Length: 242
Image: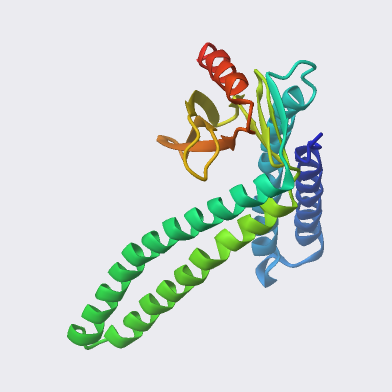
């Protein structure tokens, strides 16, 4: 079963907060304020408070995930064959690459056009601004290529299992609680198998980003061959909880 690593993350955040708070105290007591002591103390205190807030978030997530990992009667528990998991991972990798490529073409193209305008029509500072914009476009290109590869490596090394409970889902080592801080579960859909693609369950979530922005996202779980009826029952059970 997938371990709950959020407790480890909470501990690391608390240790970091304590270290920054200690640096703050040392800065106030041992460094002259006008020689940088006040500035160092302010930055350290800010980081200590930030570390404490992050630790509290991890504790909230860890408690929610404990409820999933310790559920004695999961709705479904599937162990995937290596060949199926490899095929699914590679397909998701290609889809991730395609999405990032389209996004880069749109954003990078806009940056390129704006850089060209600055280069041709702005005399004072135009070339420098154009170089900065092109550098940002280059950075976005690297990120668009790197993130799918990192996710592919993580997925290949993750446990080949899916555990679905009434509290949430564990899929390939990642835990998705149905109710946690800033995240809520919206619903589930079952999709019939297609050519060269197994049946899937798609779970929809909403995440609060900032104060007012709600960002929806989905998790797609492949269904092993022969488990389609179980998957349909899973979706019916999960829909009943919305």
